Amino acid sequence: MNNQQLAEIFERIANLLEINGEVVYKTLAYRRAAESLRAYPREAEELYREGKLTEIPGVGKAIAEKIEELLTTGKLGFLERLEQEVPPTLLELLEIPDVGPKKVALFWKQAGITSLMDLESAARDGHLRRLPGIGEKSEQRILAGIEALRRRSKRMLLGTVRPIGLRWLNWLRGLPGVREAELAGSLRRWKPTIGDLDLVAAADDPVAVMEAFVHHDEVVRVLAHGENKSSIELSNGLNIQLWIQPQAKFGSLLQFVTGSKDHNVRLRELAQRKGFSLSEHGLTTPDGKELFFANESDLYQALDLEWIPPELREDRGEIQAALEHRLPDLISPADLIAELHSHTTWSDGALSIHEMARAAKARGLKVLAITDHTHSLGIANGLDADRLRQQRKEIDAVQAMLGEELTLLQGAEVEIKADGSLDLADDVLAELDIVIASLHVSLRQPREEITARLLRAIRNPHVDIIGHPSGRLLPNREGADLDWEAILTAAREENVALEINANPSRLDLDEVHARRAVELGILLSINTDAHSPADLELAEYGVSVARRAWVSAAQVLNTRSPAEIRRWLAEHRHKSG
DNA sequence: GCCGTTTTCGGCCCGACTGTTTTCAGTCG
Image (cartoon, rainbow, N blue to C red; front, side, top):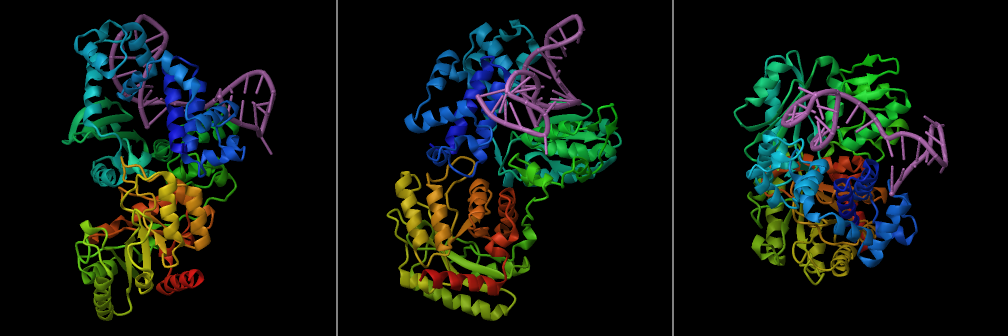
């Protein structure tokens, strides 16, 4: 059982306890433990073997014992008893907007409602309004919420929402009276999946701006409409929230709405220890004086903190690091000067080698590796040894045309086959400048089998990079069930780089494993896996994962000069071969 | 249920918006 699965169980416990009316702080404790497990760089299973489970923040004696029971028996008596008491089907009701644990408990205990269907028919028949605190409007709101829930495909991809966010931001900045506006929330933190889109603005006349916002022609539903905060829904189910304050408070507002919630809770605790109260309006001193902040960095400074990049604001130690002046010097998109994973018409790419090279050059890249698929991936028209040798001639010809400005490398994204062997013989791999090995098929093998497959690839002396290591596809396909400690240990021993694939539906390695990898001294490689020139622009999404993993430029192969990259490849092969 | 440069017991963040309550509870971020 991995950390993700453990986290889901504790989240479930928290929700059930909350519906059952348990004291808030107990449910909070389970929720915090769940969040902590999701972010923790090492597997609980391993910590358990070392007797160190309580080293995980938010895990104390009681939760450690539950983790132990889950790891050793695969079950949890406490949860089973809880589910006897509280029907687990109630959990789906929590998904409805504006329905929380109190209302779920009300529906359940006073109307015998235990499922989404029960609730829907009760609302439709006008029975809900008989309950205390529920009127006709609440009934309609619940029906609309159930509709919205069905329409909406949970969280959307960062790569889908960001262009929408930038478009709305642009529109907002063009409105009269808007002095400043920014993206906020999980979008500003570059979270791989986005729930709601948050926008903040500084405006002289908030009422007029809010009016324009809720009457924007893409709005299908107004969810809330206030002076400081409004919320609307688009036809694709995406919710957008707009927050407005006067310019003088813009910094505090931006900080507050950027979150994360957990980061803000930590920050408020810190403010309290210093004698302040912190809200989206600013700091309040004990004698009731209010301090406003037009700039976010001034707010952090007032708390004796360095400004914390939004990508780090997840309550993963960033506040402590900021206090101690040891925040990492994060990589930025401009640091990337090499693309080491790309496809052309030789396999399933859209452009010829020459066209891809021109696109790479136009983006200012210094190195482009052509890494087409290999032949066992028949669907992608993969290359065999003969076609690779033909392709080499074309690459050489294009290099001759390009001159020195862009260095082309010939590589391959070689398939790790279901039996663990590579799709090209060692002598063919040896002729290539760079070799990426990737899993595409049989991703659902049991942990031992699929881990062994990947380990065999890592140990092959010709393999330089492991491409999209887990094989996950957001938002729904889980990655392979890998023994990460074994993979990371082997990668470090063999000096093999691990890819952060920048495609928004991959972002693989994820931030948790990327952070663990650099802690162990493993080199990362951020690549777009470009199949077309537009794909090259996705690099910033890969960089965002690296930033959320506290990664610096020096820890990424693609920030190095062509000569340094060639040297690394040569040394790497020499050492292994 | 967790945790400790106020504490091993007694705390554990803050405000806007909505609907229904005639003064506030629930939800959300």
